[in-house]
Image (cartoon, rainbow, N blue to C red):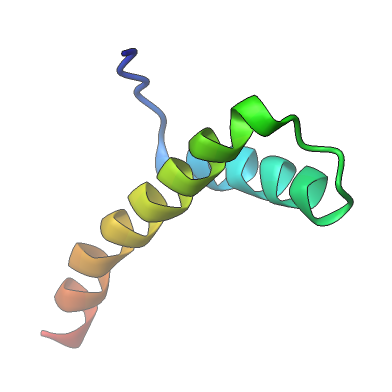
Length: 55
């Protein structure tokens, strides 16, 4: 397992790239787990930020 540290901006850029490849059917199967994990991580990172804005 590898722990990859990305800024939120970098994570979103990578997510957009992988999601686009997936949409067009060009994403290699081996990267599908990476895409799912990245979607989950971006979503989780967004939650604390939304809580701060609501307060």
